[in-house]
Length: 280
Image (cartoon, rainbow, N blue to C red):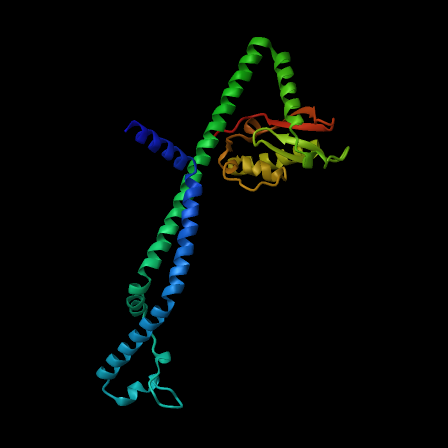
């Protein structure tokens, strides 16, 4: 019994870890099954529609008081009744098709639920990751404040410089090769953990634009800062939820804090921190 429980726990951990992927896979399978089932049932569906039209014509013909009332359903050349001219209402169409496609609709709905659940689980995990990253940053800031308090500003600056050098050493090759002396340098935005190419003047201008938005709208996100820095990002869900708030633009503005390092091959690198941490 204990082995069975252990097996269930292991299985649940695997499922929980890969839940968004599993749900997405189930959705794909469901959509594929729905398409296959719909294709298989198509001839039967056509037959049921024709039957529903014939039944409708019979009812109209039976209830008609004038024989000319049926002329709109006749072929102009032969004069015979034709199903092509019979129009079903949405409810009549549903009654004819529901017995044929009910399982297809059910499978499609289940696939849609899987897609929605996968999206919800993914967003919750992103939110948890964001909360954890902000908590880590808060603890790091507390640690830095304590280092400064115990060892002084000089030691704090030394630690920052050593960290900047570590970040610079991790610069991706494609960023490093874009270095142009005097024009653009490898840069690292610490808060977003992103490498990009820019220069001090452009970074300063981006922060000015960011602060203008912050003062104008009362808040701005890390996504906004990344936009002004012209950093290409594929997934901005986390960044748009990292927000600075502003009551007084002079007091609450966010300034860049620069440190310098060099890559493995000696290329200069700018490490950019922010003067004020996000509010949420």
